[in-house]
Length: 100
Image 1 (tube, rainbow, N blue to C red):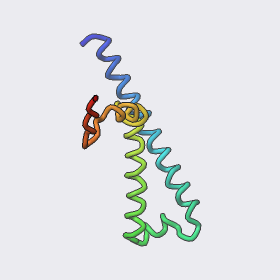
Image 2: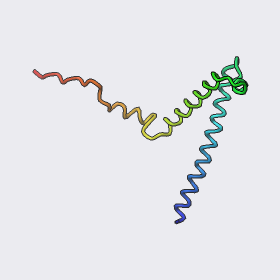
Image 3: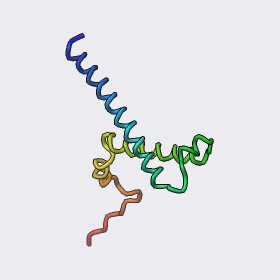
Image 4: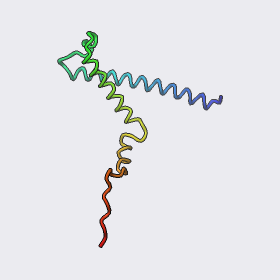
């Protein structure tokens, strides 16, 4: 193996660790902010009690967060996908107007 390949493997490993750490920190921050936004219920205490409804809501928040990150990072989606959507033809094309 050449040094270039080993360097690329090391870079991928380091960036995957950095991405995992950033995702973990931001997900923890997101759940803490959500907990602060709902003062009438302590989500983490309810999860410890086995409240399935709270678990479903927390799972939905985590999945929505993951989908938002996916749309931001996936090539061809997000803001770049908005410009390409203008080129989609309509479902029922308008027939041309006959010229007199």
